[in-house]
Length: 426
Image 1 (cartoon, helix red, strand yellow):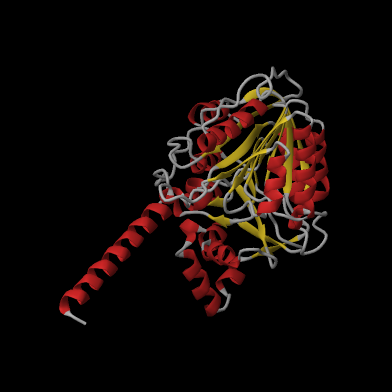
Image 2 (image 1 turned 120 degrees about the vertical axis):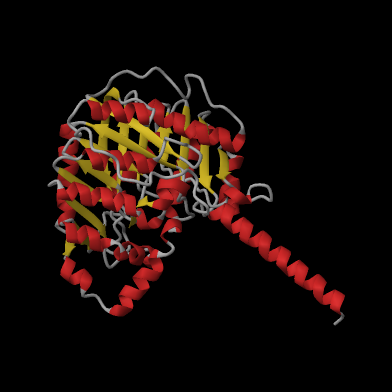
């Protein structure tokens, strides 16, 4: 091989390597600059300043007059969602990360198709990675009038945002009934968490003025993907008070600036005066969030966290999570592992007054890379009800002590530490 040929190969390989590294850096980089120091505590959750701040900083105001019902596991979740779809008269907007081919996927497809054929405007936004529907399945739905789009489908000019996924779970019917929470449209969510093949999860049915905020979240991403603006009474009808709850639908996405999901959680933790109860399917907090929780513990706040136990769909996440438990356990946090099946609930309850539920995992990916949406409710009665659900889950969970965590095998400690190095992408 001649010297010039070797040089040409070296130059080519260098160029390819450089382009690959640049692409990875751009694609795997985080969206917004995250909060990098602990917030100063100025007020408690019960102080009127707290809901005022959450409405101003997070931007969507808390709206009165709403009704929210929790739905536990697929046995309650899927019938309620399907009943709402089948009752649609004007529009259905549906954005979800997980939608798989299978029996429950077919039930949703059939219900959506029937409504589209009846003249209802049906729009479905699926994440390109999470929406694993075969092409024939997808084509049939489109042929029957359902508008289906994929979020961030790879193309040569958008590879830098490929790591940005929509993790939102939003269903809005006629602009009047909304659903959000942790559920995916797939077989593991069926049933009633009765065995390891059927997951434990919580979803919520919402009515009232706050549904317009949820619809707005869908419209924003739909416009981003299609360029089309959905508006008018079919999507945004007049909404009157139907309950007593004050609520907001808060969204985040890379590039959202102050609209940071991490900021919402940090403000909530910082304002806690009595208790923080957290159900989290994927719990890999950064140092700032851990320090905020430790500060809450030091001022006497009771912190209870329920996480997946022996049944976990992503073992790497479980290891990365476990690597960071030390400071929390040492400060007095009570960490529990759910035993019967995969635990996929995503609920935070603060001071029996403030509740945040939705698609967001308690990790850097959800805080800064994914598109997420949460429903925040400021109401004592609603919070008490969610604490009842939390206590029921505790009955099926095992507490992990600091002694147990410190005494785990060295092989586990090494693997946990290794996994934690990837925590920003898990």
